[in-house]
Length: 261
Image 1 (cartoon, rainbow, N blue to C red):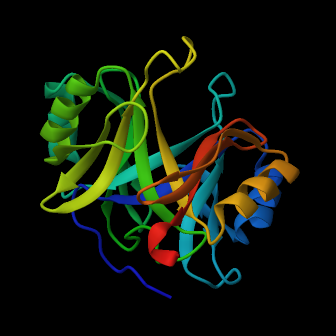
Image 2 (image 1 turned 180 degrees about the horizontal axis):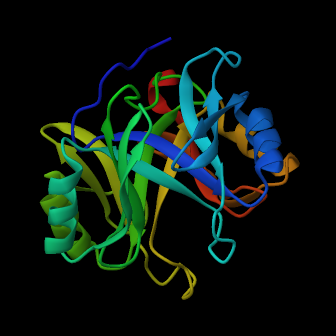
Image 3 (image 1 turned 120 degrees about the vertical axis):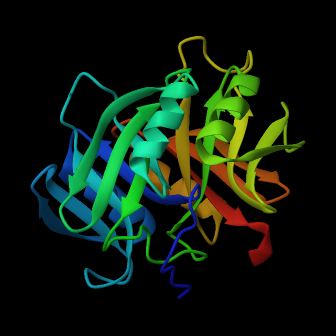
């Protein structure tokens, strides 16, 4: 099991679901990914569900939390490592973003803050103490990619370059030009332009992708468990992927990496 003990600044570290029905979400993700959960009480956040692989004592891979505001849609939040929350907040504001929450001390685990980019896509930054982020990667049921969907890709490239030091590299994967955000030579996130094929009411957002062994089987199982498959299993150079919304309406992707074929 490929353990992760440290994340470089600017890389994705964690994914957290805000859900209106915690028990239903636990059942769905347990059925889809085989996750177990246990509850952690955090002074600043209330009860928080840690998702693990291989039983409750296994490595932590994601988080679930009841939604504090039921006027907002259920969603996954993608977290990125920062070397300093204050500096990240200054960079976000200077580049045209907004601070939504924070900074917040999460007991002994670390500090977080929640921001929105210039188009309104929300994301979080994490400055760790005892909790670095997901403790395992590179195997099924773990976070493997994060992707921004937005309309003004040039503005997004400038914003995230200023906030995280990302370099944008275009890739022709499918349909519109796809952007890989890189730190050095390593791709850490992706971006797709929301063109006319997207519904007019669709909002810019970050979406987490979780690795699976078989994309078709995972999409079929998700549908049986109550998800709605938005993009059916499709091939791209990195692997075979699908995009869905879970029974509560939160968007996520699954991908079977090409390296496993």
